[in-house]
Length: 213
Image (tube, rainbow, N blue to C red; front, top):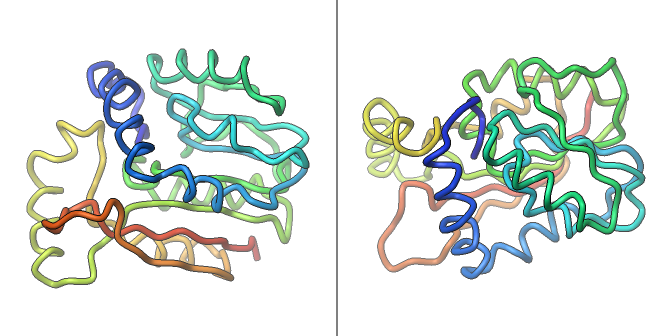
């Protein structure tokens, strides 16, 4: 959840509180599904504090991890040093990736497409830097299925949520945005995470794979 450049308070909260709490709630297996089977040169946009780094499979040759937020990037650099695969952390934004066309075999978006300022531009850049037939793996919270919760999401996204949550938006239709960016969805799982008694505006998640057309 780190699309904008400087959110030091939220960055520290996410790294120290929210991230560990989500992992305690069972996010680890979802991260494993997200990364399973990847190989070669991989790009991770909005890598945050590097919680995925230790979960990349051995077949991955190198991970280029983009993170624009300085505090999160510092945490990510420390996580990269402990990772089993080679990871390079880069100061860049998803909407302006400093890499040549077709440079990567796969790209990973994990809880970041909710917060990039321009989702369409970010996905267009990911499409550009992937080789033809390259994979986009994504795990994101998205627009709810319930019309009532969608209304709650619209109100939150127009008022307080992006301000206090590092630019995050609760109700983006990310699957539709991925398709609009000329990716073909080949696998899509929709589920609620974490499981709570009270419905949460960030509870609806999707996890899947898309192929660069």
